[in-house]
Amino acid sequence: MGSSFSFFPPLFTFINQPSPHPHPCLGDLPESCVASILMNLEPKDICKVSLLNKAFRDASFADFVWELKLPLNYEALTKRVFHDFDDNEGVEYGLCKKDVFARLCEPNSFDGGTKRAWLDKSTGKVCLSMASSALAITGMDDRRYWTRIQTDESRFHSVAYLQQMWWFEVDGEVEFPFPPGCYSLFFRLQLGLSAKRFYRRMCSTEHVHGWDIKPVRFQISTSDGQESTSQCYLREPGRWIFYHAGDFSVNPSKSTKVKFSMTQIDCTHTKGGLCVDSVLIYPGEFKERLKRV
Image 1 (cartoon, rainbow, N blue to C red):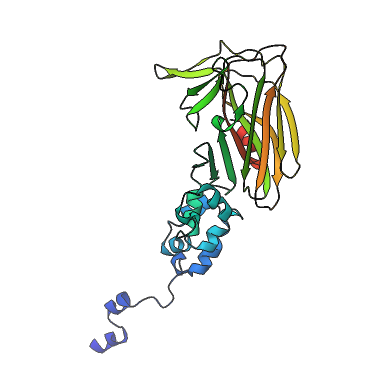
Image 2: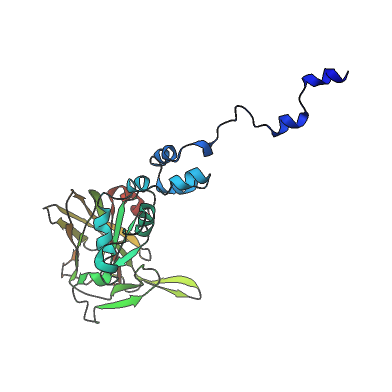
């Protein structure tokens, strides 16, 4: 009877022996294959799937994955924005492309803190904002007309407030290595002066006048000859609104200079009660997004 059991191996041999055909899993994929998959994902999704396992985590640091997410001229961008690094060689030196992308996604201040540039985390598109202090405002030095107000409602912590004036004119220009593409320019404005009282936002509109009589005129011109003109009435006191001034396109080049202005120079009536916060240059596909804000 004992010989009849000799046909069956001991039970522990089945337990300890590995399966002859194990099921494949994500961790078995080669790192190069995983990196090829990540190339087709958006930056946020790459960071999410990097948590799956070690293969995805290691592949998520591959330079060729993140170089596709960076703007074509990212080296020129880093030299323009991070000009204060050692030897002026740019932040990309010593950092992997993933870290360069992360640094560029932060609101990076330059030109004495009057400008900020960053990448949109989802698309990698370049965005830029300019403070009111970087603009040429007619009569700004005369406190009878303009005052500078400190506020947390501005990314630059201050706005220019027009009390009353006959001639309203705001001009500005910026030269920046924008990547090729279409861009929209906006003025961020508010009718009325807001403040916090008893932890509640209040907005005084008693000095708002003159903006419903004639529209404000916006103009844009670029160094390669593009021009755009538009006009609109300023309305909805108490709200920060992005007023679309115009669009322009950038072809592959070293740098693009953009000049812009906002005027209401009809001297038949005074204008007042306006806060000028900043100018924003966003990718053209964000135009509708800003209009809804």
